[in-house]
Length: 89
Image (tube, rainbow, N blue to C red; front, side):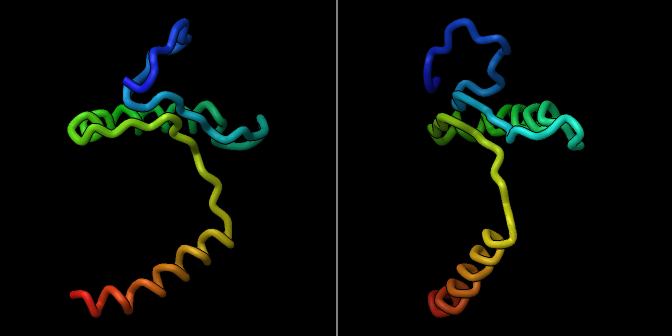
């Protein structure tokens, strides 16, 4: 268990993850923030056996924003790594 949480409003689906946080969004946005939070809580519940077996703990599981720049940077690093990985194999 990461931390002892007193007076929590909802039960925690995974004792190895302390907080789950979805990005704030406007009410007109679909799907709403509550759906994103429910999805993160479901993911946390699915990760529970893996985290228990490997002794992993996480303080905060958060939804991340991906934009064009992040995708470009990730492809750039993959392109840089692929030639070096070929020489190892």
